[in-house]
Image 1 (cartoon, rainbow, N blue to C red):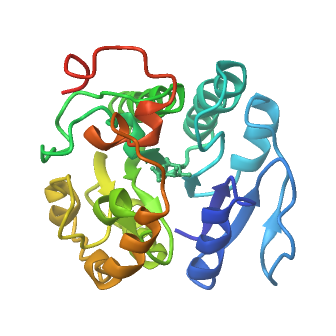
Image 2 (image 1 turned 180 degrees about the vertical axis):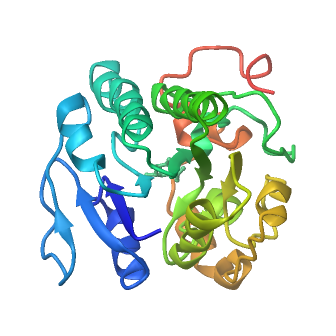
Length: 269
Ligand code: 15L
């Protein structure tokens, strides 16, 4: 694995990964806007993911892709559709055409956000998206399975919780991932010799986790960061949040309560 493309490289997670992956691979960075400043050895090519010709240009010549690109929170469908549905299709299709070996897809906890917090779920449960954004991540996971099974692409979908130096509130105590642990998962996705298609949770070693991350563990993932070490920080953040009785029932939190117009006892799983 020599050259790796990072889409969405100008975002917060992209910026963190660029620093941590420096030296491990030759990096091609792509986004709509150029991240500043570029480090020596980094190459930047602008691309709108909805433009297939542009996506083919960035994918050509790389062996691996870390696909962070697209809309990363809930937005109107008019924004989600081109970036996360059309864009994600273009990315996988270009990877197939240009014989890319591995795609690591940044999925999200919001693909399963409507599970209740008292449950512990693995990656074999059906998707329960909490937003249009979550639906787009479930779509990306399905695309990944299709390209893996039909065309032999190696695909790791990471249902990322929340990437930060510390968990910001009590929901994040359950879903937080330190950037260094995320890099551990990404490198499994790019390099594990036996990988064909897997979904894992992007979480650190969190005692309050809602997820059974056995699939990641089986692939050799050993997170080094623990949410419990930052409990006081998360409690302080939580105390500053407004009450959210609907969001507090479900794993997706505010993504669930936004626009909510159903019977909460009948929603979710
Ligand atoms: C996500 O999927 C988002 O990309 C990120 O911005 C956070 O909102 C995170 O989920 C979260 O659930 O905290």
